[in-house]
Length: 423
Ligand code: HDL
Ligand code: ZN
Image (cartoon, rainbow, N blue to C red; front, side, top):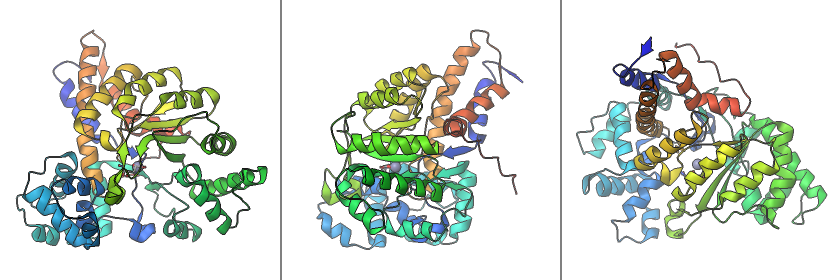
């Protein structure tokens, strides 16, 4: 079917909405990880994005909030952000999108009634319905071997039973908290010491390789503070140069760096207390130039870094820019970033990931993002079609396949997982 100015809009919206998604960075877990797998309504309400927004209306001391039960916290968040004020922030309206798409009665503001409706689901029916509704087919987790609860599941060989889930090996502790890391590694039986000796480096490499194999990790991941500079005469640069990159080269996996967080600027908010900060893109440039054979997945947290990072991706084909991360996962930033990324990189980018922590969030984070990405694509296809270029549905299907998963699987050097036939 050849497309023209008239039928282009319908075709783009339809194809974007039916393209299966690989969500390449989330904090979701398969049911294998039991309590780490969050999906309840009170989990959605106590999402740390909503906690920080709620505190802006409260005089309550932080400690008093943290002493409440999860249900009491959820009640307070509902009362504050949904009843006493309109739920129009990204995270608040997102929760309503989830309720609506799962068929709950969003016209009632009665949280008890919503909880009763929610309780009709089981975790498994919920997972199936959320993946069906959101169009997410493959979910990449964030897997931290320094987390005792998670480590236990992997060591029992139970981490990989759900083929919809994939692992990413998270190494923040090794890079950002070496004093803790070497003590933990020693407890796990690795012959490491605080001193950066050849034996210590070899043991950290052994630790990483064992976990990459155990998890079948798709990539190595770290979240870096905004003051990350590279190269530098510091632990991070030594760990990157002498351990992380060699291991990624040997195992053939990308290194994902998520740069620009300033942790716990307000400790009272706990997980909700992190801030973004302007970071040094030249660190990414140095990594990509020093290691032309190493693939880097990069996302940054400050809006101010986005355009420069996108231009850098024009210079280094081993740099794959991904997602609108955290405080950038809002309509205005997703639109702004997606436009200049496509204007500069065409279709060689991973436009979005969800960063979900609670399973149902897949529904809103992807519905909101698909709508924005579709609108940007439509504008760009219209401009191309206006030149007389012949566009077909197959072209758009191919392009959307690349954006919503194909680019990721190709970049990590694996085939895009086959679409499991609809049961
Ligand atoms: O470090 C990260 O992976 C961040 O995404 C943090 O987990 C952050 O708390 C978050 O959930 N952002 O969406
Ligand atoms: Zn994350």
